[in-house]
Length: 455
Image 1 (tube, rainbow, N blue to C red):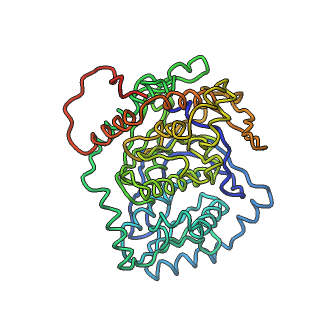
Image 2: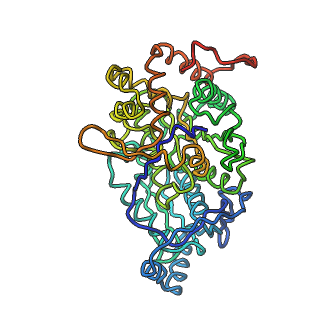
């Protein structure tokens, strides 16, 4: 959908690589004895050949575990009351879908829990990569301050074998209070109203002002890329009303699985609505949003999923200067505001680069101010067709630094357009879309968007 509103930056969250893996459709989880259940959608069964390689030495070391010891440990865990689940996942995305779906289920319970997921078709190195990074995440207080539900989780590898042990402590009274306050955002959410509000935003921003020239309606994307080998297809609107970061990650990976198993012509791109994540327009709501989508991006990039998909993040109070790192690229976000003047200069808009105030340039944030938290998941093949590798340029920041950037013309055009729209007009449009989510609206007539509310 937002093919021309994504800067092609390479963001590295982790310095390790992972064992040869593919992306395919979502797996099924089941118990080895009495805990039979499925926590992910069984419909997704197609495969996708995206391979990730370790060096030979890394591959050998990651596979060395004692099968007898591993099986003995599993029996011990089961005998001690640990829920033992087996998962038929064979690829990165199915692993992630199963893991986060299980964590979402565990997170919903205030009591102490222990669950073991056996993933015999997944290389141990991939499991180790996730477990190690999750441990690192828990030490990063900048994020964990806004992700309190993850603090009680512990994830480890069972006897160096292909299984996760997921453990949580019981929530304290204070933690229960924090959770109860958080889930208030889930109250009275209506999927139809939420989706209609988002479609209104797409009509107003993406289509009304041609923020992306390859989207001609809120339901059809990749129009005009046929000569570059891309077939237009539907925009998939997906919804998850959980306020829990684990629920958001589970929904995100379900969308990834769906995109992988569905042909472009049947599903071009997906927009995932997460209205209970960072609900509202306060600074605290924005901080929560920024932390959650950073974790989403982090675990997509962990297994180099950014080779297949690009992300575009939205929030009703979107403010690029409040997204870390402020002066460097952040995956799925607008370029740093401090880069806009150099971008304008490079694009031939030197006069605007000099004359526009910081307040006027900050209106660029409105292209990401949707009525609720949302993530647009784009196929990289579509992004490459829309902007191409030649769009990546060396941007002189004017302070002795040169950075790789793309989307220069689009960001420059949008910045100039938004700078010349009165702030109250932009706010009015946004507030109307937010209000659409809160109350029943009369049926809308098929007409063009109101011109005075367009960017």
